[in-house]
Length: 276
Ligand code: GLN
Image 1: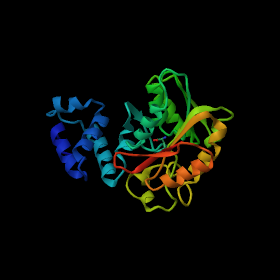
Image 2: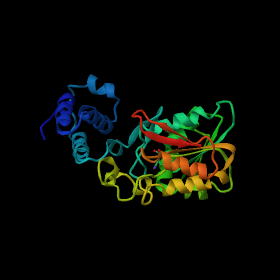
Image 3: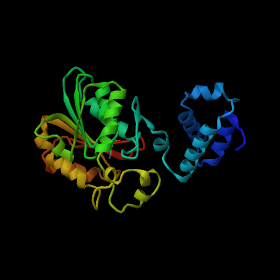
Image 4: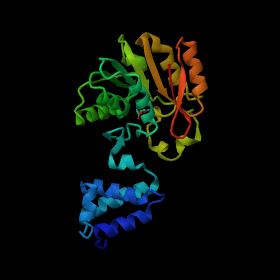
């Protein structure tokens, strides 16, 4: 391997990655390998990168070129105001999911000691965002997958959040007999067999976090059906879902006796969160 300086290595790497974000992604991978801040790359643009780091960088670059998601290669992803650890046991938190956090916070007065449950927390993205914005609230984060829950626990510790509790289990089984002022979830909602599951980032993400039955609504049906037993009177249920599932989910909420069922659209004007 020839010796390359930081600036040259980045230029070469960016040229090997597809997409508009190639330069940014090359930087993120090098920052990860060298364990430095972004500013370091510019202050040390003419430093030669040592052989060991160079080799590790090459491995990550090759994986990224094969399509492995950047977040899994660096093990990090920003969500809301938090820098979160992620791994292949967890879904990669998406910017769309911030809409769910926004809608939840709008219904959680900051001066009340409310109880919130985030079912299927994965990396903890939703639960930890709410917990950080509402220090008086208690957030119960659940996941059926132990390795995912372990990531969420680490993220809570890394951010010093002491108002989050964790339980492992399937949807309401994890909540036991407890009742909450609000239940939120970004459940799996893709139809089994949807071709998107084998494309892009999704093919690297945990299948149980993505697909849910023939129409993608199995998990949501279960969540809606059990909500009344786990919400206080007047409590809220908020769920993220696919762009074409809003009407079906509002109908489910109405059948279950919810009032004020409504769907909120994301920045791309697509149905994304339904609540009641
Ligand atoms: N709650 C997590 C998130 O929003 C995980 C969701 C999931 O795995 N379906 O990122």
